[in-house]
Amino acid sequence: MLGRTVLRSVPFRGVARQTLSKTSTRASSSAAGPESASSPFNLTLTASAATAVAIGSAAYLYGQEAHAMTPAEEGLHATAYPWEHAKWNKTFDHAALRRGFQVYREVCASCHSLTRVPWRSFVGVLHTVDEMKAMAEEYEYDTEPNDQGEIEKRPGKLSDYIPAPYPNEEAARAANGGALPPDLSLIVKGRHGGCNYIFSLLTGYPDEPPAGVVLGEGMNFNPYFPGTGIAMARVLFDGVVEYEDGTPATTSQMAKDVVEFLNWAAEPEMDDRKKMGVKAITLLTGLFALSVWVKRYKWSPIKTRKIVYSPPVSRR
Amino acid sequence: MAGAFATTLYRSLFQRNAAYLTGIFASAFAFELAFDTASNRVWDSFNRGRQWKDIKHRYINQAEADEDDE
Image 1 (cartoon, each protein chain N blue to C red):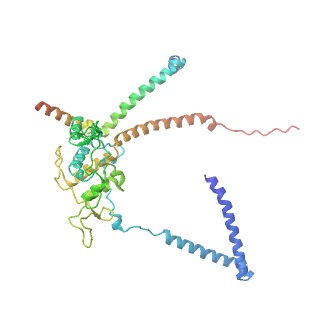
Image 2 (image 1 turned 30 degrees about the vertical axis):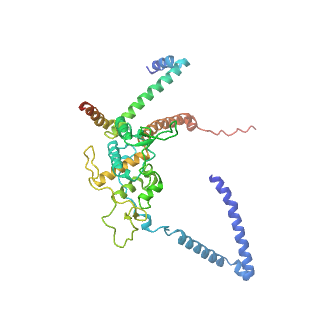
Image 3 (image 1 turned 45 degrees about the vertical axis):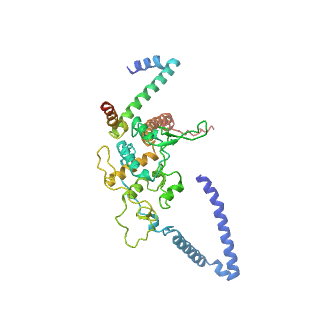
């Protein structure tokens, strides 16, 4: 790679030098007398001025920060929180996931779908199989067409996916003043800032918008939302849900739980992935140490040999 | 002493290819078992109280208690 770059740059530089000398000769021969062309001081002056202009314009173009959007359009950057489940050796806190799912079902699910997550994925992770069967049976699903081609309704099964609150996007928009509540299955992966952003968004609604802010009709102010005008109003208030394990349902507790749950929904493989990663790194460390030892063992005769030069004895 | 041990090792494991191969497969099996058990135990101690198996007794016992009540 390095060699190739050097090879290519040498002829290029040669060409550049050639053209430079040619043009300078021609320009000076047509404009001024032969003395100024040969004057090294003028050449140095011109080159220095050109360099200064080039550096100055580059600094002007690239040196200053360019923003495509105003800070309000960017949204306030989310605070980085020390998520316990984000550490390399920590799984999700499954009690928190269970609380977060409760928050999703009782608060978020009235507008936001979670269509990529089937009921079966909760079994043995957040809930027992009996709990999940009962939960799935609360919803009705379409059957396959029967002999008459009619589609009937049946209670949900574990293999069904969580039903969306609205039948389609248009219905969702119509019910929410034109705004589409996004699907939450992959929202943690799909937003800059991930968990931090969603937590900040859920807990960042001020009591009233700051002075001078103009909001569209039905919009709410949230500094963390890009554009600051968000159709979703604040939904998490202290005590909105009642946790079955007795955890106090404060706003931040619910936001933390539901964010961790959404992180699980987006990355259900995280627990296993981290465990496999730890195992793989442990094994590979051992193998690496072994390979270092083998290399040193094989090379030791070469590294320790001594080359002796015995000059030819001249025969006379 | 070391020589005697090496001789025994050679006679029992390396001299015959069948014994050598069997030894490799058996030790791979044993290592896998030991490594997995040990690393799972370390992992569970990192994550004490966080995994489903740590909290499921609350819900499974509860379900059984409900059935008893009925």
